[in-house]
Length: 405
Image 1 (cartoon, helix red, strand yellow):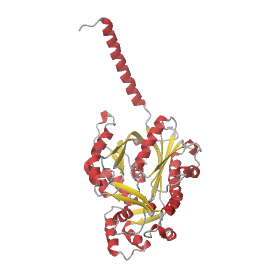
Image 2 (tube, one colour):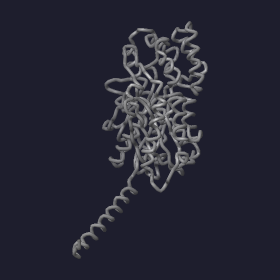
Image 3 (cartoon, helix red, strand yellow):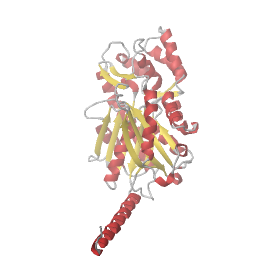
Image 4 (cartoon, helix red, strand yellow):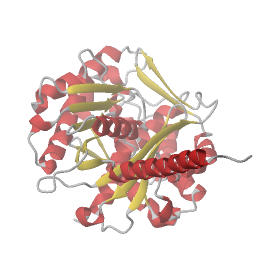
């Protein structure tokens, strides 16, 4: 069908306008101000435990030294855990004051909450203070606060206590994330990214504080996961500051958060569970978790890579990896499924070795370890996993010139 010159002109203009809009969209994409991690600070309780002797301490402090066979089983778990040391707010003196924490059948939820609602924000404040010190800006410039913890549920929550402990503004916008599990450190980064990219000049403080006192109890032959948990989990807090457009004179970007996303493996809600009961928090972890993670991690990482600049053509071994060190099987599964060189998991294994599994704090500890090492790869990803089964991930660009230390 023939068309008149005026139609040709309209088509030409439309094509020209379309290309103009494409260039505008590309320009907007290039000029978008990405969220950046501006500072990271850590804190641990004063009680440091050697993994090789922990079963002896654990069975002794819970008055269960007579359960020799069960202690030997725990010793084998500890010996295979790839952990050397862990930290805990609990010590012999604390447990003497709170025998209900380990006395079978003794209700203790109220006492655990009272204990943790004090200790969780105190440790979080130490980590946040370290992050604020590194950041170097006035605390009054913090506009948003995200607090992450499995423990110490109370009203008002740890977020309100942290406002006072840190001297934050009374109008700081607060988000409280309770009971999410090991992936919540990445959840907090995802929320912070959305906040700062949609609120110019904002600065978000993430405070993540985890303690396993909520699950501590005497060993029980009929519930082996208590022993597994007591063999793996440690206490630790981390503070992270996130913002956009860092002031080149007073701030530095450690990592740009280029993309953040989450996925759930279908029909896996039964695999990782936690139940609050009269004598504390009970965890259940199905043995199928590493296998399910193995089935889902590669498709999830492919999704992450779809958001990397096309011209990079990165392979996984050309990237850095901050993977939640939930245990040796978790780290090994990610390494195998992504065909990673062993050195790519070295930061995760370092955190597991020196701190154990500190739930949501773990992956942020790994990021802190990566930024302290000589910069090799510019691009990378951080991954964490937990109940759901949930996979959380972020695509990161490391500012190589800024992070060598």
